[in-house]
Image 1 (cartoon, rainbow, N blue to C red):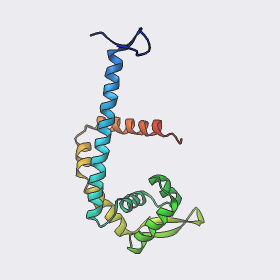
Image 2: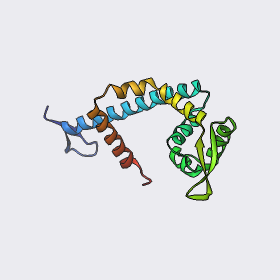
Image 3: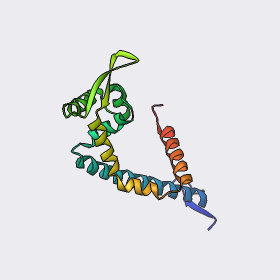
Image 4: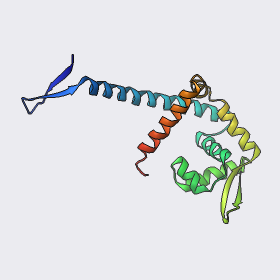
Amino acid sequence: MGTLEYMAASSSAPKRVTDDLVTADAVTADLVELIGTLVSRHYKEYEQAASGQGLTTAQARVLDLLSREPMPMRHIAQQVNCEPSNITGLVDRLEARGLVERRPDPADRRVKLAAPTAEGVRMARGVQGNLGFARGAIASLTDDERVALRRLLAKMMLDGDVTA
């Protein structure tokens, strides 16, 4: 069928929607469903991996961020999209366990950076190392597919950021 016709309830004139548009909408719906399923599966696995290290998912996320680079509380809060006061509590608990330390920022000694200890880095790596599904799914892609996926996901994040 070349063109689908729909009758508008308030009009006797048909509205025409091409097969391409219907197909595009179906693909978009499939993509939304697949992304939701992927995120859900990743979150569940991340929660299990964090728990295996004796961490909450929030603690594991903060340790993961800090293992990439030390940062001030407000930057952590921006990265995880939560209130700075929540981050202060998380960092306090991680610090009490010897996983994070606060240190002066060399660029501005008035600012304190949260930084992982060697044990904190070890735990963050332990969480990442137990994400089998994500690692396996990504490893099954070719180099070109991984580069394309990274580019597309980054584009989606930029295009979907209504605060930018």
